Length: 397
Ligand code: GLN
Image (cartoon, rainbow, N blue to C red; front, side, top):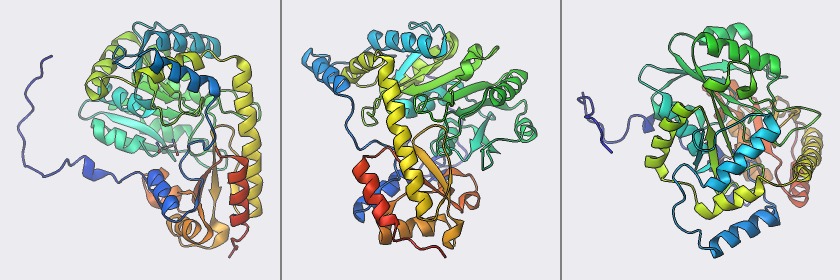
């Protein structure tokens, strides 16, 4: 390994100027507040029910087999092969496990490694907003300038002219999250084609976070941008075990990218983390081979929870944007007459005993999220029932 000299520094700051440009995660702060106030946590998106017995058994067996040392830095062969098989089944894509996959510590690291592998000073990245809050810091840490494009309620569609205006010769990539956190939007083929046309015209990457691909409702279909003509060579797919197998704390995710891009991602990943937890990767290989009935049950379970929380929130006076995917419901809180989302979220967690995520944390300009609040429904029936009870004490203005 060798490194070249950094450019001369103009001035010396005590801490990273990059780190000063973003705040702590609001989602995780809401979890801390929920614990402090003994509130029901409908803020952070993690299931509070058990992971499938088979995946837990596979992890325990892997430890007992002494899979306790580093896996290959870019991922255990068994997991890479299982990813290839599943992507072939779900998207009809042929992936080379030796040259096109990098297993990372969660989709979070996969996204960061991808960004650091492709961004140079002066590069811009187009980000749809509302966005999953990590993408802003991801852009800053990798050195990219973010350019935001609005997804507008009620359907969270974008204006093609606004998207086109965000692209320029400086555009290095667009970040897409479909199904989308926090809106529950699932991008359509037409929308993806419009994005594809711009990405091709400006020779930009499409980084697509597909972590919620198996959580879909109302006949929505997940289309990976990598399957569109002209996209395979410019798409970086980010995915992971967290949501599909209810193991958000295991931290196993991956990138799928063309060979030269994968080579760059693998180097960044190696020096960031060396590798994801080896026994969890073995368990992931087993999970990715679950029969289709597993995925049907997962989606059916979330459909029931979605419908239940929609009813609870609407009864309590929220206007809900009905999600077609993910396990979140974005709401409009105008009816409650609070000055903004943060004040309302605080009232909810402190006085009502329910934690949710203020909409402002999903926007570059916090004022744009002032009337929104996001609720997660990846929770047990008992938790949702208890939340219903507490939310019934809310009063409209
Ligand atoms: N993706 C989840 C959410 O949006 C969890 C975020 C996190 O804390 N990593 O709530």
